[in-house]
Length: 418
Image 1 (cartoon, rainbow, N blue to C red):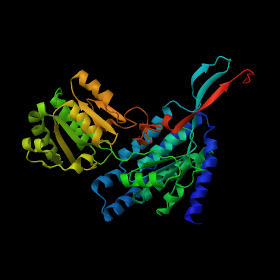
Image 2 (tube, rainbow, N blue to C red):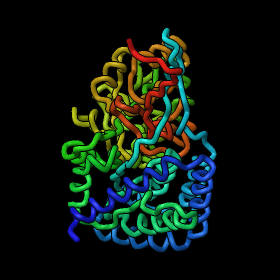
Image 3 (cartoon, rainbow, N blue to C red):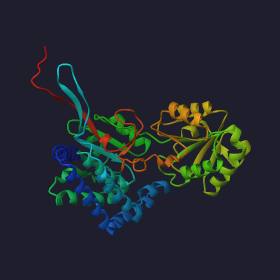
Image 4 (spheres, one colour):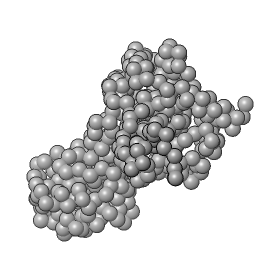
């Protein structure tokens, strides 16, 4: 069977399975997710053995440490995957919810009801936890899902998918509702993107190159997240000790993820006090700093920043630093160079914080908190399917509701249109 035929077969099977999943009760879907969580927990040794193969291949192929970190399945991350499924099971089921019922003058009642999207294709790189997170959210929202991870996580994704599919089979549900594409042939992605009659939505997760390839080649609607150029602006009204903690967490805790800080903006009035302190802390943590001329005048340890640095998503221990004259200059910098992902202001000035919330239109805007909280789980959505930096049909971390749409329902008593 050719790759084209194989992808069409998978998509048709997923479409058929989606019709079954759309009719399941919340109780059955929740039981399924809990069973999947137990399966992951019980197979921890097997998962780590398969993951070790991927890690070895990654090292041999020269992947960066940041990429290897994304790939790694520790006992804590396996537990987090299982916990994520349980959290999604505990969330309210959006499917079937009727919202905004209103009465028309002719007596008909009109409302909108949430329904599953159908079949969701997810194309992603590195992180094998996406396999479990995406499966849980798609199945709980009544959809079928086709998962195509990167070749670097082939063994890990296959092992996770096998465990999750077994739970479907154990409950006499169609295993085709969750399919993991295990071929490393890149043509598989190209073929999936052509199947607009069977697949309803594509969600790519990975580097900018992958996202652009999918967006440019898909016949299917795509939720895009090109990159995370996240800013932290330390205002002149900031508590500097608080700012240090927030900035260190945002840059250093996990630099290889999309919600890590990539650019630090500092108001000129506090730059002489704050920049030398944060510079020493960052350097001690192994961060390479690239600053504007004013930042380097205060901290000559910094390398000079270029125009490209302001656009950069480093995904590494590298940070761009700029001194700004005002809140307005910080805002303008974010609006020019940002990627609509996550922006943070650190300030004790209430007026300034509210202005930041009103004027910065990235998908997540924060006051006095680390950008690392820009995550569906941290924001109370359960596991997230991804972060959308496009405004249709979802914006920001995507949870259960974002995997549904709404249809109109009309209730009448024999009315006919004149």
